[in-house]
Amino acid sequence: MKLKRFVFYFSCILLILIVWSVASSHKRRNRPTNYTINETPTKHITIDGIFPLPTHRVYPNIKREDSVIPMRFFKSNFGKSVHNFKWLHNPHTRCVTNTTSPDIFLLVAVASASWEFERRNLIRKTWASVNEVVGKNIVYVFFVGNDRTNNKKLEIEFNEHQDVVMEDFDETYKNLTLKTQGQLKWITYFCPNTKYAIHVDDDVFVDIKQVVNMLVEQTDDKRKLFCAKLFQPKVRREGKWEMSRRDYPGGGYPLSCVGWCYVMSLDVVVDLYYVSINTHLIHLEDVTFTGILREKIGNLGLIQIPGGNKVCQHKGWPKDKPTNVKLMEAWEELNS
Image 1 (tube, rainbow, N blue to C red):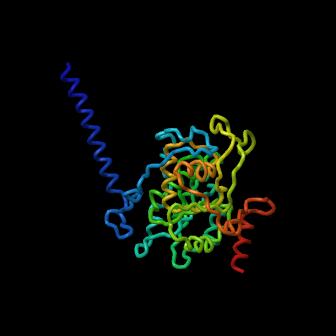
Image 2 (cartoon, rainbow, N blue to C red):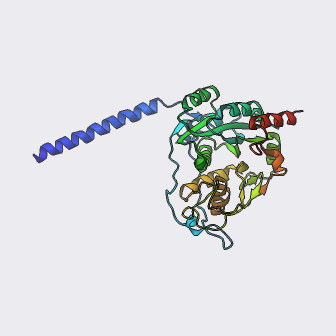
Image 3 (tube, rainbow, N blue to C red):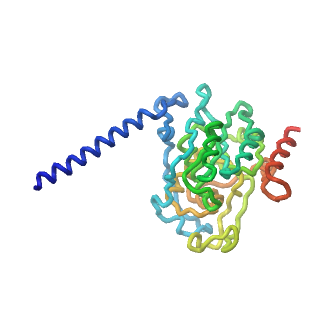
C-alpha cells in the first residue's frame, strides 16, 4: 500500500515538472529577440527588462534629528510595498529603438488618466513632438492604470503609438502613488540607458527645450532632483487630501516637489524605486517620493528649476477654460 502511494505521488510530481518544463520552454521561444544596448554584450532587453538591472544600493535609512517624518517610515519593512502588478501594455523596447545612438538623454514619464485619449493625442502633437534638443534624444511614455470600461480603446491606442504603459491596478486618485512607483520601476527595468527622467502630469505644458538646456548645463548627471515648485504641505485630516493618523501619524510633511513636474537623474530614479519597495507608502505621491523617500535614500537636496512655473505650466487649474484648450494655446504661444 505504501509503495503504491509513493509511486502515485512520484508520478504526480514528475508530471508537474514535465508540464512546467514545457511551459517554460514555450515562454522562452515566444519571447522577442534580445537587443543589445550601449555596445555591451552582457546587457540585453527582454519583455522582463534590460538585464542586468541597475544596482540596488544600501541606503542610510537614518532619520535626521530635524526630520518631521514619523519613525514608522524608517523601520525595516522588507517587502512592504513590492510593486508586482502585471504589465497589461508595455512598450518594452521604447528606449532602445535607435541602435546607432542608444543613449537617451531624457525620458518623459507622463502620468495620464486612462480616459484622456484626446489629451494624450494633443500632447503628442504639441510639446511631446520635440524628440531632439541640441543633439540629445528624448523619449515619451504615458502611464495609466487599469480602466476596464476603456480597455479596448487603450489597446487600439497602444497598438498605434507604442508609448502607453498600463498596469493592473485601478485607475483611481488614491492609486497615484502606485502609478508613480510604476513609472520608477519601468524606467529602472526598461530605460536604464537614460540620463534623466521627468515626471509630469497630463494637464501640464512642458517646455522641453528649456528642460534639456537646463540639464545640459549641469556639470554632472548624478544625484539630482529638480522641482518646478517646492512646497511643505500641512497634514490634513479631512477633505481631498485627507490623511488618516494610521497612515501618517505625524503632524507635518517634509519639504517636497509639487507632484505635477519634477526631474530626476537616473540614479535617483533607481534609488527611489528600490527604497519604495520596503517602505510604508501613503497616497500623496509627491510627498511620498520627493519628501519621505528622498530623505530615506540620504544626501539629496531639492533644486528649484529656474523659471519653474514657466517651464512646467499647470493648465488643470483654474477651471476657466478646458485644459486641452489651454495646452494648445500654450503651444501656439511658444511657437509664435
